[in-house]
Image (cartoon, rainbow, N blue to C red; front, top):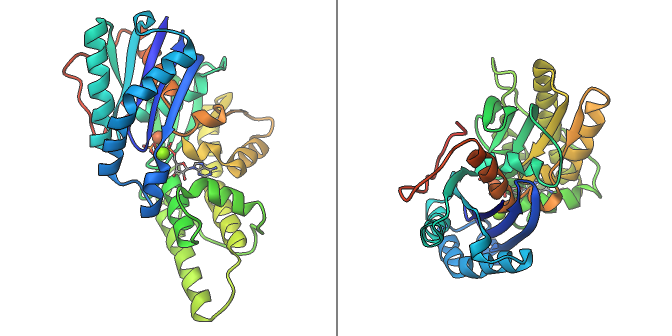
Length: 332
Ligand code: ATP
Ligand code: MG
Ligand code: FE
């Protein structure tokens, strides 16, 4: 059973062929970073246009890499939200055209559900498990009871973890996207140099708040500059990263104890963070197994969408030609 996945929710045009849900035959990713980085973030209008230019080539590449043709496909799975609506529409329209032409079923997939499903690719992980979803726009602690059965136990009340990384990197003049750049700079820094506070959300044990730490970094930088004091970028990066990772790991472990799971999984772009991976493994100790998706499948890619599509299809879900793109979309 071959699923073609299509992902265009943000600034990666991606297409993938996945066999039987978990075996990645190809995962073509066209990144638009070089068109967006000079603006310090993703420009929605540029993203839509670049998706439009790239989509046919990227799908062709995915088929070629997998050594299959259009007629071999059994299912088309496409991200239908959340994300940039103009960007999503490119993937959704393409997928609808393809499904109609090939007379093959189509299924719309929630991008965040896709990030969670990245954990199944090339692995034998089975639900139930606890999943920390940390991406550019989301920070959720999700209990995955079964395929497609979720309980959101905690979430950010303001900025997402990835957003905090990106904004802090920007303040430090590191560039875009900030996550990998902070990760790298932090390796040469002292994480105990500066104490940045992460706010606890009153009455909500498992929620996050990351907008305060971003402001704390900005305040620190302004104060140092006013006093003409030197800023050690690596120390700021390491101290910021430590504060965010500590908050993520602490709440995730709390939730894992509540649900008495065996395994904790990571998903979303921030799951690529080396400190987060290291800290979670260390503090999970012998209490929990820790599972990560392969590195390239943490950030946006279509293999995870194909995987989610396969399991939804097996559960009897189908979309039709009325499928639309949604800027916001809940996990349920
Ligand atoms: P969403 O999935 O919420 O719609 P998105 O698709 O833009 O948002 P992803 O592609 O999942 O987000 O992840 C991108 C985010 O991951 C960016 O904020 C980026 O800075 C962050 N990121 C990537 N690599 C790392 C890393 N090594 N350390 C920290 N953050 C990282
Ligand atoms: Mg991206
Ligand atoms: Fe994403």
